Length: 477
Image (cartoon, rainbow, N blue to C red; front, side):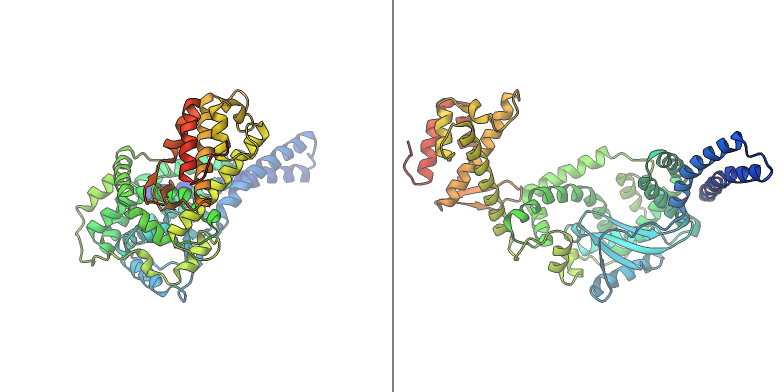
């Protein structure tokens, strides 16, 4: 009953919107046809045109077919195993298979239909799969997630699928509009989401049953818990590790790297804590038809565990030509290289950039002739931090900002000099922070070396002597 009411409201909205566009126009035409085309009719015509323009944008946006989803399409011919699994999961979910599968470089999975009439009619169906899921989930976990997304469109009354599709279409349409039309349509989309919400939430629970049928209850519950922390993990991996790729000028194996990152003991511990916190702090939007994750996990306990076999292989084992997909979706920065090489080259390039910035500041401010780490430490020993900082930060900036900036740049300069001298190397650390290893195999705390010298001129000479010793050179004093 609730579903039928929601769809009736949607149809009524479209009918009224079209009436508001055509009605004033009919009145103006009739007025002129009957010889009443005075100032009043002209004014009504202007108002009608403005109303028609605003509402017409809403109507056109609502009835037209949405844009093609983003991502790289993968064909049946190129990825037969992935498509075999997708076809199998569509049958489990009781719906037709998608017309296309597209990979995107983010943690997501969704079925998108390019539907006219705000989802009242079905259309071309796209399954969108996030590349990080292929590293972060096992084959079983991916089966669970994809079965759930396909389950939105099958295994239940047709009206419910239409209501769900309409909610999704309205949300996407509202996002494309701005100004008065955007506000108008956004308000209706929110109203519709509230009206259809209970039915959509029940539909989500039915889709979760498809997850259990496709992968088993334990695997489906584990996948539900994993998605939130995976999003956090991918954001960190992208910002701290993939961001090194352009600097390195090399292309690493992205999926293998992300899986190794997730397998790091420290990363696992952090993500476990994040997962618990996300479950505790979960909140929803009016557009969010999903019940809380804890509620969904609890509801799965009542679903028969099924006989789906456990498959712990990484999901990328379903793909062929993985390096080519990674290059197209994420990064293509040059020859292939493993992660230790990419990490070392990327951080070496960043250290050289910091050394260059520090040297420019030292020469511009007159605190050092060449701007080497040795000369800068000597200037710090003379109490010239403020002078050195003039080209680096805006006048009147807090003192701690100058200290932090100088510490970071001086640390980079020290690392660059050690690398140039062949006295150190950079070891891979999945946290993203460079780990400097000296020639004798011991680690170097760069920040612990330079920070005291920046903060206290009396400590600068000791740091200067230490850097000279590490670089195996005499002082330039």
